[in-house]
Every structure is written in structure tokens, then in C-alpha cells.
Length: 354
Image (cartoon, rainbow, N blue to C red; front, side, top):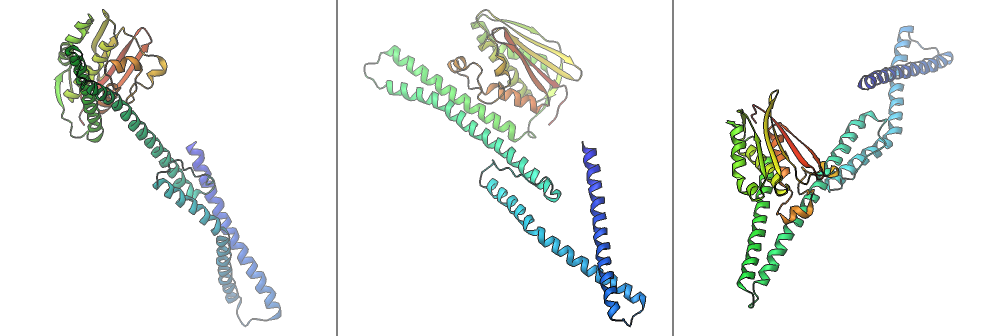
């Protein structure tokens, strides 16, 4: 397609050159014919050479006048098109990203500019939509725990409240406060990951040991639900941001524990594939429906809204996982089926430096 477009541009340029030559020839012919008619009634005291030279000069002047007239005829249309572009830029500067400029397909001098403006408006519109969704989601997520805290704090003022009820309300307030704090930490982590990748500290470390340590750190959670952990790792060193990668495995394992029923199983495996380390976290929990799979790495998205809210989730864990994996130039994929569990596969290069 690019080759055909280039051939078309070359042919158009050739036609333009031929048109200019044709207009020049026409102008010279008109001037030569006019002077010849004139010389029939008035014999010039010049030689044939001077007459030809005058014809060339008059032809050039006539050509210039003709081009000026043509330019003036099209100038008004060009100014209208230019005003459209200026108006579109002003609207974009005021926050109107629905701007689209059409009708410049045959004006090559403006086509590239117009396409760039349309692309910019589209990209800014998507960013604005994401920003508004983000603010809406943050407001919604914060409102729920704040409502609980306010309600139970008001209930604590009741003089007839029993010590058991008082302690129960205080535990809820503490839990909701912890949830707000965790949400704030996650948002700050996402913001720092997006803002400054160059300052990340990397080192070589044993990935197999890191996975073992993460499984041990989560032992109280999986033991409380009587979940069997199948760990299959072999010795492997990688280079990367050790703390961030630990957060990846921790988040994936916590998700697996959260959505795996009592007596279920979770598998954590480590293998090599070409120049990448591949970590897979598999569970036989509630699974994720197909429509939800394409959204699970979006901020605040919750595939199982009722359970995630009751268990304190904010929908940020997998967003953080995706961001960290992207920073390490790796990839994360998920295979899941509702009611049959999920399998998260993370592949990262052995050696990575920001």
C-alpha cells in the first residue's frame, strides 16, 4: 500500500510539472500571437532576436499574472480550511477532544497536519475518559469504607452499647481504615511505577528462593483455609527489581488463596523458556468468566464484585502486577474458566536493566 501511494505521489508531481510547463507554453504562445498581430500594424525597429526576447519576457510576466489570479481564486478556500484547523486546535486546548477534521483528503499540504490533529484529539480523548473513570472509581472505592467508619463511629456514641458490640464496631472501623490505607499505598505504588522507572534498583537473586519465601510468608492464610500448596521450582538466578517481583508473586498468591475454597489446591511452578523465566500460579478456585478476562488488569476492575468487596479488595492488585511485569519487559497471561479455577503465567527475561 505504501509503494502504491509513493508511485501515486510521483505521478502527481510529474503531472504538476507538465501542467506548469503547459501553462508556460500557453502564455508564451498567447504573447507571441498577440505581438505578431500588433506587428502587422506597426513595424518594430528591432531585430528578430530582440522580438523573441521581448516575447519571452512578456510571456513570463503574463505567466506570473495568471498564477497570481489562480492563487487568488483558491486563496479564500485555503483560508477557510486553515481557519477550520485553527478552530479545531483551539477547541482541543479548551478540553473538547471530540474534534474531528474532515474534507482534507485531496489537499496534500494539509493532510499530514490534519491526520496528526485527529490522532492527537483521539488519544487525548481516551486519556480524559480514563482520567474520569479513575476519579470515579477512586471516589466510589473510598466512599464505601468512609460510610462504614462514619456509621459505626456514630453507633459507638450510644450509651447502652454492650462491650461486645463496641469491640465489634471498633474492629470494623479498624478493618475499613486498614483497607483505605492499603488502597492509598497501592495507588502511590502505581503512580511511582509509572512516573520513574529509571531509579529502580536491580540486582541478581535466586528466583526459586524468592518464590519459596513468598509461599512461606502466606502460610497463615493458606493454612487457615486448609489449602494444599504444590511448589515446583528449581534453582534459577535472574536480574531485576527484587522487591517489585516479590510483590508480583505475593499478589498472585493472595488472589489464589482468596478465591480458592476450603481444602482447595494452589500450584506454584518455575521453569525456563529460551531466555525467560516462567512462573505459573494455578488454583482450582471460582475462576473468571470470559467477558471479565479482558478487563482484569484494569484499575479497580473486579471480576467477582460481591466477594472482592467483602474480602477487602480494591481491584488494584492485578494492575500493579501488570505494571511491574511490563517494566521488566515481560508478559503476563491468564487462562481461566468460571468454576474451574485460574492459571496466571508470568514470563520475564533472565537479565533486565532499566
